[in-house]
Amino acid sequence: MKLKITLLLTLLTNILFAQVDVPEKYWIEDSNFEEKIKEHHAFGDDDNLPVIVEFWASFNAANCFADWDKIKNAIYYRVDIAKAPIAKKEYRVRMAPTLIIFKNGIKEEVFKAGLDLLLPANLSDIQEAINDVNQASKF
Image 1 (cartoon, rainbow, N blue to C red):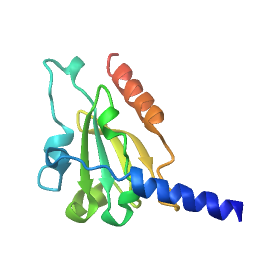
Image 2 (cartoon, one colour; image 1 turned 90 degrees about the vertical axis):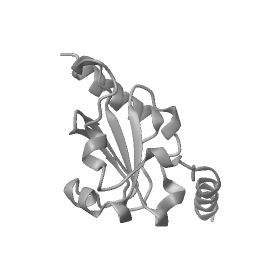
Image 3 (cartoon, one colour; image 1 turned 30 degrees about the horizontal axis):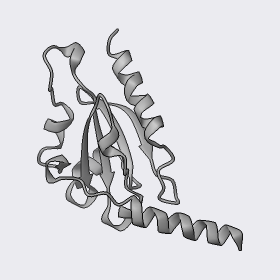
Image 4 (cartoon, helix red, strand yellow; image 1 turned 120 degrees about the vertical axis):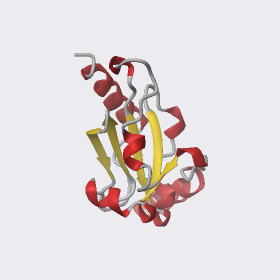
């Protein structure tokens, strides 16, 4: 019974607090996906920021990556898998949310939800991966 109550409270908390509105400028779809993951915002190759893309689904909006605005040293985009079937297929996205870190258009790291539709990584895990990608690109 305690387990059921805990699960119910966790689910309720996720529904109330995890569904974060992402401004329109951060949404991409098939028509601009490749352009955005290869985006260059700085001068010189050494300063290019990685791009993190969250594959999102409306049916699982409660489990979206809520800390997207706290990511440092990366560019964030969200893509609705219903509006990007080509990207979904190309990157073999089977669960939402799925986060992929790209550097110069190359897939570097993937975080994907499990069968419970929960992302098994938090902001700290994702930021560490971003930092690793940034550090590796210096060599």
